[in-house]
Amino acid sequence: YLGGAHSSPITRAQLADLTGTRVNQVRLVVGSAATGADDLHEALVQAATSPPVRFTLSAPRKRAEFMRALEDGGTEHHRVVFSDLRTVNPETCAESLEAALAITPWIGSRSVVLLVDARTIAWWMPYLAPDNHAPGLEVMSLRRFDRRSLRAWSSGHEAVFQDEESRSKLLALTGGWPALIERASGLAGEGRTTTAVLTELEAIVQSDASIDKLLVATMKSVPPPLSDLYTIMAEAPEVAMSADDLALVAEGTYADPRILVEAMRALQVISVTEQGEL
Image (cartoon, rainbow, N blue to C red):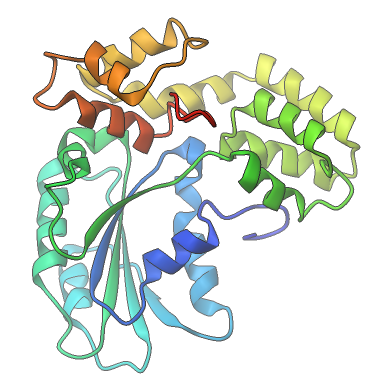
């Protein structure tokens, strides 16, 4: 948790992977406002300042500062360099990634965390291909809640959502989107019962235009053929299919249609059922 009932957009396992363990690495983090991308930097700040100190964090805003941060070294702790590329043009994104992969600190180790979203998908989507990863580079997604992570979330709310049935209702109502789970956290923090939280949250989802805008914004900037594939799925949301089936639907629209499926999964606009279907 970041503050009050505000939860972190990353799990403990993701945090451990992002910050690394005395190795030089680069993580390309795919997120959106709906999956809590706005809170990623704060989550890293809190982790960096919480004892015991495992790493130091820098978030350079200018290119010269970023380049200098990549090669700085000499500290006793592992270093993490964070850069928000969500509003940066693709050329600058490519330059940042190339520099992060090519430049290493003169002493010590560091992790580079590059945050992106749908606005630069044409640039980062090829990196989802299994054969397109440079050494030390991995792609990570900020995730929607599922049954398991929602159970962990409920441990921070002792008075509400302490049974599987109520959590299932919350999951069905919110789709597991962190932005909506945050609304539930806020309502619970006001002392409301589980039933009251669900009732008011349902009213919010149905009437608050900002919720629709938040979720729609996730795919708003996505170009064809990915947007076309999303439209096909959105027209029949109740139909489940395998990843291979979905790739067949996109056959002929992209060099490797499986990458389109992986991009939708990275943005969390499709979810995986317990049977492995999408």
